[in-house]
Length: 160
Image 1 (cartoon, rainbow, N blue to C red):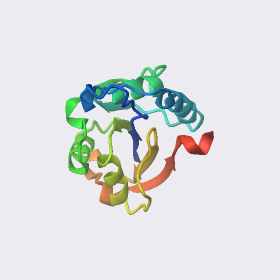
Image 2: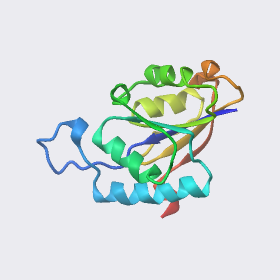
Image 3: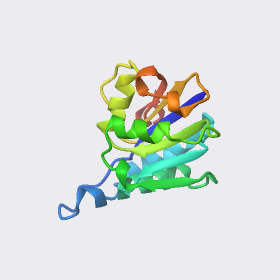
């Protein structure tokens, strides 16, 4: 069984219009929601074996808030900044088969497109939203979102 945890970065700040999109930090609500979802990840035993994250400030900060106590390896990828579904899948199929659960912290619309491709119908992945996608296989090379199954979508709104 292979499992990907897709995580949209927490809510970011638009307070400084001079900042490039890539450099926007989290706002107070985003920080609060990421800390809340860190507890949910722990309570639901969703800790990954590897974390891949976009190099955008809001993504790396979200990753640190969600998994700051984790000892699993992390990889920061500039190519995950605003990555589309095809690129996200290219990261997945190249994963080491010794890993069974991997988290990806990135952005919409790419993450929502991945979930839609599993056949799961919903509007979009909310900020700090988490989607768990599974495949009944031992090989990441066989994992495309069109063959995966979204088994849960979690949002901070559910836990407030």
